[in-house]
Length: 207
Image 1 (cartoon, one colour):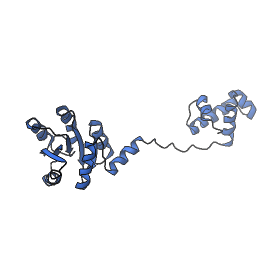
Image 2 (cartoon, helix red, strand yellow):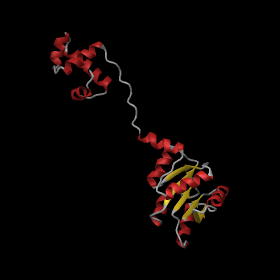
Image 3 (cartoon, one colour):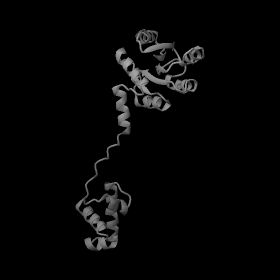
Image 4 (cartoon, rainbow, N blue to C red):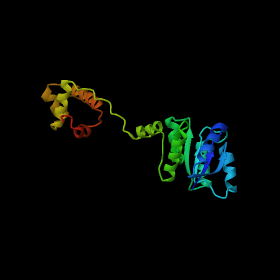
């Protein structure tokens, strides 16, 4: 049986969670409280500590996220799942960095909530779909902006660089002044988002 603790300040929600989860054969509800402070105060008197804690974020006094460090200090092996109406990316990542193993929306149906808690007990990290999207987006590389096309003259300059010519020889080949060549090269670097001849050659513009 999985020992469970619940931190929720709204009495109707707390009672609904207790009424449903404590009636499930997989769980034994050992402690519930309306604040992190009250929950922490109740832990020393427990014969068996909670293995899982389901915690709200917006609580009176210490927030659920702030409480994570205190919970883990008293119960080093406890697994904490956040249950909250706050699903913005900033709070999601703050909670995960603080040690939460899951993050669920507060309107998660109770049968699904039970399944998520069983996943945690089995070593999983459940997240509501909107929360998971934040995590996925965080690790996806930012799309590179489309490169601005080079003019025909700028392409001639690039060909000269790729052919190994000096700026002076490029100028001679194209019947330009060396200052004009340098001006074109600055534009090429800006458009191709490179900072040196070596980067330009590595990019392989012709390819």
